[in-house]
Each structure stands twice: as C-alpha cells, then as structure tokens.
Length: 392
Image (cartoon, rainbow, N blue to C red):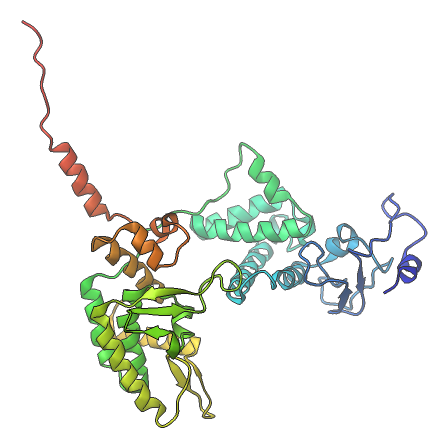
C-alpha cells in the first residue's frame, strides 16, 4: 500500500477535534468482517484488529479507512477480537502451550465480564475498560471463591492485553497506595511418599500391553529424573545414555527462547526398569525401528511420539487403579523433595532439574518439610536456660 493511497484515504476534516496524520507504520485497513490487512501482524506494538461490531452484524468499514491504533481501531474492537489479535501478535515470542493457557484465561475473564453486565460492566473493548470495571471484576472473582494465585494469573494476563491495547488501567491501579491487587500465594507442595509410589507401581504392573509398558516407565523414570511431561513425551531413543546414567532433554521448557538442551539424571536403581522397557519396546515395534523413546502406532499404521491425550489417559488409569490423585508434575516435585530429603544439596537438586537458580527450586519444588522444621525448633528450645538469681 503506497503513501499516495494512504493520503487519499484520510478524511479532510478533523475527527474528535484532532487532525489525523498518516501513520504507515501503525496503519490498519479494515475490510469485510473477519479480515484485516496490516503491515506487520506479529509486532506486539502494532496490533491488527478488524473493524467489526460486537453484536455479530455486518462489519462496519472505518469511516476514514485508516486510523492510528489509539483511535477507532482499538476503541471498537470487541474483547474476543482483541484477544485473538493480541495472541496472534505474541506467537513469535511465546510457546504454543503458553498461548493456549492465556487463551483459556481470557475466555474465563470474558465470561466473567459478561456475567457482571448488570452491575454496569460490559464485555467491552479492552481499550475502554476502566477502574470500576476492574473493581467489579475482582468482586466477581471473590464471590466465586477463586484463590489469590488464580486471580493474580487472570489479572496479569488481562494487564498484558490492556497495556497492548494502549490501556494502562491495571498498571495505574498498582501504583495507588490504597489498592491491594491479588498476588500469587505460596501453596503446599504435593509430593508422593514411598507408600504412594509403591501403589502406583502396583497399578502400572496391572496394566497389560503397550500401555502397561509405558505406565511402568512413567512411574519408574519420572520420580527419579524430574522430567517434565513434554520432555518425557518427545524424548528420542538416541537421547538415552544409560551407561552414564542420564538423558538429554532436547525439548525443555522455554525451548527456543530462554532454555537450551541439557541433561537429566537416571539413577542406578531405576536403570534396570528402563532396560526392561527397551526390551518391551523392541517387541512392540517388531522388525521396524523408530526414533522416539516412547513410540505410538496410530490406526493408520503411522508411528510417532506418544501423544499427549494418550499420556493423560494412562495417568487417569493409574489414578483409578491406585486410588491416588496425582499429576505428572507431582512426580517432578517428588523428585526434588526426595533429593533434598536424601541429603543432596539444594544446588545439586536445582542443577538436576535444570533451574536457573536454587530460588526456583526452593519456591516451587523442594522445601524443608514442616515436620523437620518443627523438630529443629524443638531442639532449639530444649537448650538449658540459665537462671540468674538476684543478689541477696
């Protein structure tokens, strides 16, 4: 789109008392509903939003054809349209899983905004959300019984969306001394004790076929290595090094942004179990071979990595048979706590979990148990006290 065309599309009269100047770097051209053309759709500083109306009718064309994002483009975009454009702009910078999580959070926020319309709040464009809207939204979350961490996550994601839309309302609220916005709360860490791990192993032994083989590998490897769900599922056979007791994590959390491939440990006590799995893997593949550590043969015969839904299914079956409520993240926390309880330094545990610092390990995984802490306090108070008699 050339400069001449931009100039011709601009109105000759001011809008809102201000003359509108061409801004090719931020310009938007809205056509029919659902279509928007822009120069750079991935720049988070220049969101591309379609000029659609929020009532679901035919999309209106922008009166002037092109506007700076602070004018009609951002002001008229519905909440769902803004969310879609915002997430699209953030895709080059965030993992797919993070994008999906934010999308779910925004869907919840939008539902809550619509639920409190009777209190003067509308599921309006992000650019026009004000302090009163945020206050009523917080009241809604309080009535729903959401904990501080959940509210803080929703508010952080909403703050990012609003700031991107040129609306600093939440940022400004944080600066006010009388305002106390929700903050993340440190929750007790769920770990599995020796008895629960034994019950899970028995549950895995009761599963037949290839699903049983994978289940036995899960309950043996994950609590002893600290592998994350994705890291386990996308591991390749060549990444495994039993001779040196480790596995290369090629797809870590933060892959492609702030994390690089690194190793996770495979302690000696579980290496026999991993070798048993490899034997069952060879039987499952038959004469063929495959790169994935945990392969999965689909109905059409194609073999790929173990799928995420199938992993969820195995976890659900283990829960049902063992009677233990857990997640794969519970195994990672269990790995950290077992390491600390076994005498490993927190630095060693943090390194094995591939954390950037021990602060993350201590904050979210391995902490001193309350029983141990109370025992130390008891010992401290058992010291004999010295009584000083007053002079006669």
